[in-house]
Length: 181
Image 1 (cartoon, helix red, strand yellow):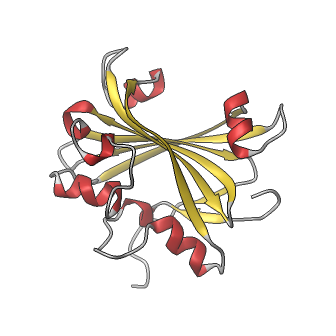
Image 2 (tube, rainbow, N blue to C red):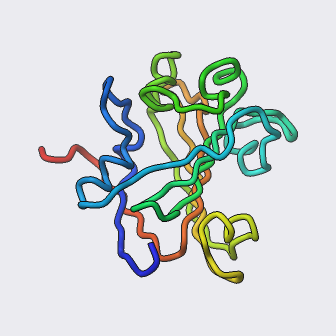
């Protein structure tokens, strides 16, 4: 982002995609005349970080499936996006595999019987870790925003916790209600 004001909304990222439709990030960038992309850095079973265990209501040390992606804008890194799923939901599915998930995670989760009905997002700021600086191309001592998004089903089951790390110049917009009505 580096000085680029970019306002992003959450809702399109929570909607399942239709077959052949590009992902929400690619669509958002395209609408702005830019090129969005992502690179899968890791997929598979890991120990859940403490914040993720708490969000997913798991006991400490419980294993989860993670999909770690580097989000790109015009081929430049703008965000690290780590999505965590309980093993009971994502174990043995394409989410655990180091390859693109056709239709995206939200569509696969819907097909598995998990549709997001409630989202809670928590935003905090911190100094970037060495790993975050390396992936995002930031100088040491840079500030970042952390957005922890918890998605639950209609019956309250925590189905996904995503931890997004962005340079501190990122802007987030929240919109409630139906658009275009």
